[in-house]
Length: 106
Image (cartoon, rainbow, N blue to C red; front, side, top):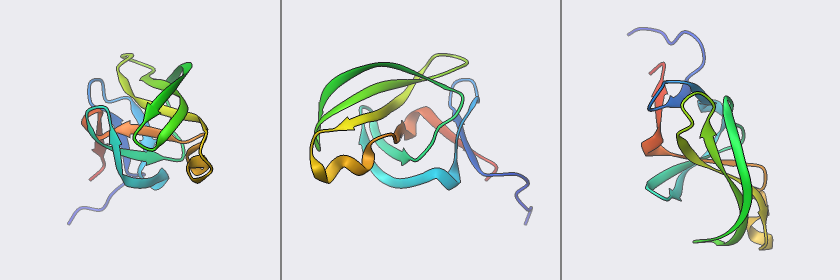
């Protein structure tokens, strides 16, 4: 069995730009616009769009779409503000949709 060299990470499925580390996955049981999504504590090589209020399955949140910094594909969103107390843990975290990212260094 080959050993993994370097960190396991996630890349944009379109251009393979590295966007998140596997170690920063908080949860794999989130729902995105296009199916399953992962909650990350951090993301990299991304651009954060303008903030907007969105009614999500867990209530009203202020979010900003997250784009790949290379190809500009929308990968998910960043939680800027949660209005419900039980959702505050999401603030500052990132949703990346499983269909928009690919795991590297498997």
